[in-house]
Length: 191
Image (cartoon, rainbow, N blue to C red; front, side, top):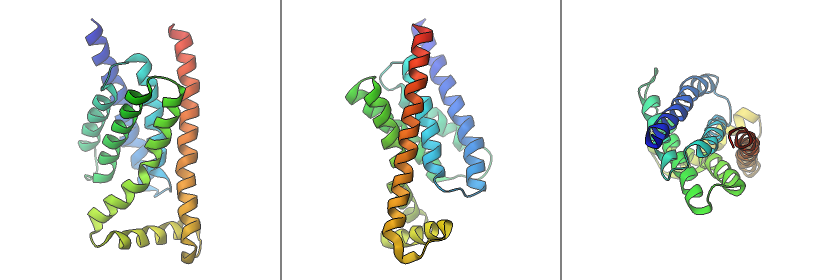
């Protein structure tokens, strides 16, 4: 009976994450909003941190991320390597942190922070894979794009990079805080 309950919860959380990825992720991509990867990672972390209350099974977050990646893969629109890789990487980061630190508030904040920060190297690597060329060309393209979004001079790339990293950190911490509050409320309701 416990295995069936775990399967149901894993499927439920994967389905919710999949719907968020397909619809909200699609709209964020459509409007080309900055920090969309970090925002999606933040929403994912809230779900994954909550899922650990219901399924405290080693590997459950990885199962959730695999199902979610599959749902994203078969969703409408074209195939996008970035979001699918992001879903899988975020799942592995969260699961790894819970394995190392256990199920506590430190894990909640670290999982949220690192999953949101994952978008920074992820973006550079996938840009390099997709666009080819050297990684430095991908860095320069990224700096130009961020400078254009924030209407900042291109030569201020260090400030742009700092703002970009700070935005990811901020979203990760907010995600961790929301996760902590929701986990405490759910624990008090369930237990």
